Image (cartoon, rainbow, N blue to C red; front, side, top):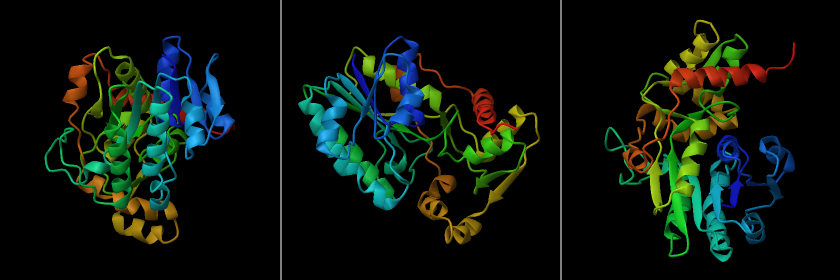
Length: 315
């Protein structure tokens, strides 16, 4: 299988690592060479392409049997508006290039507010914010592209954490624990939640792409269990041999700080996930892939802490 991995973030790295573990080379696609080279193994092909354009999509997919779309755009509503047209261009190029399987890394935004304790793939998708609408449109375009010659797959993830993850609710806590400092959490911090450990995603993607039977459709991949932001942050400090030193920013403080910090302002519209969380039911995926592994939170915290320590500036 000739695989193209679009995006060199934490999920792209996990997918590449899963294929590398089996001795397989992949094509890594992005705008800049340095991030691709950082996750590449000997034999990998690095392709600099702008997948916002039809020509870039064709360059990314030429000669490939499968592709993983793990590209993340800047976290603004304006940037998210590009997800649907980019997916339109991408599936068109995938069909032209003869790609057999195309997998999108998605999230829980399209589900909106949960109607049940556990959310399965057939739960209504009713986004409560514009970012969720754009992600839903992106996924709809992908899933509608399944045909006799190409299967399309959406893998829906909750929040994630892991080594090298920069955009996570737990990133600041991991860095603070590594530096023996005080971690900041965005409240509410004690609501039931779940997190996927990013190194677990790659093997699932690989198994879906290599599955011998039909796999088209949407799949949830839930975390290793229900936990809270505070609970997982405490495990990071425990891994560091420290008592938890955490500061929780309540919503009203986030609102005030958001006047001066664009990222906090952008995160306001997903705060509902910390108040009425979407807890995924992934029985469909576990039935298809009965051997899939989920790293326990304490083990994931140890590995995340070790990576955060390794990234600290030299004394």
